Length: 396
Image: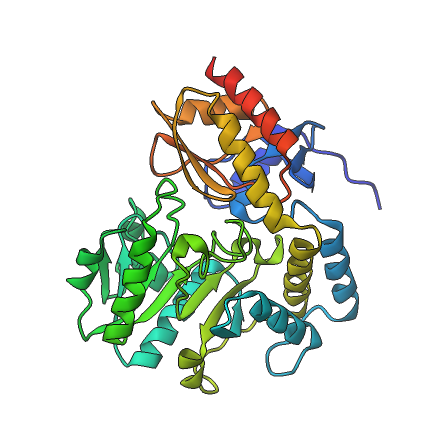
């Protein structure tokens, strides 16, 4: 068999564009390998990755412990469905529940964030016997039918037409707008506790407390979409139960992104109220809970614990906030941990492009002035210093 000849960037790009449906506007990079916070292109150049492939590379690119766990499991059994018991699934379930707030006692595994959100809304409807779901302006919950219908951000809901009925929009951070909608037909209130794509928008701690009280009073299921904020990104295992949430714990947390360090996996964590009403065949998934994905989940959680990544996020976030004060063009810093939005005085798109030319990958948002940072949790202070130096260059 002849060795494959390395293709040029133009050849790879032409092949993708010929055979793949359009998705995102791509960066001019053929990604070949990664290590920690660094992404290496096929031409040998390396990029400081402060975006993590949509916040997925939580433990860093190809962490050796995660790779070893995936390799070991793949050598034993690639997959069998939930029709059998699995040691890998049992260990991942136990581990994930052990790091969650104590009120959340069971896990359901699926394949993605949008699927987790779809199932969370289904769980709420099954639990309450009601149909409507309140979500928020600026929130993004995925691209499948129910999830995109719950998304009130820019053009996304329009792309999902005809929308699933029963979705209501309140104003993020405004409890009175929620009260006005939260009648006896509402099954759930679902929110991103930090609205990432909307420009890393946050809400006051009191808002989360008021939501919890309102849901308790009216029998409504409270769902936190922690697809981006979960698994250590905010410097805590979850936004739920943290100081920023006022200690509030929802009835359901949804997860994905960094949960498998790059292996596709999503999850719902639920409390006893939800789990008590769920019986066999109420939920189902072919690939959810597969052995390789479960090995990746367990290894991901082990890396976060063993490498001290929660403490690293808090320490390096503080360093980044100090250093960014040296950049007068940055008007504000939003978010928490390693989900941060840098607001510029003018459009951020040229800054994003100029940083990319300097081998720094960042993310944009629906707010044209906000640049998003979602780096691996292993980002070091020295790499922040490099970013700030390159940012100053880009802005000069």
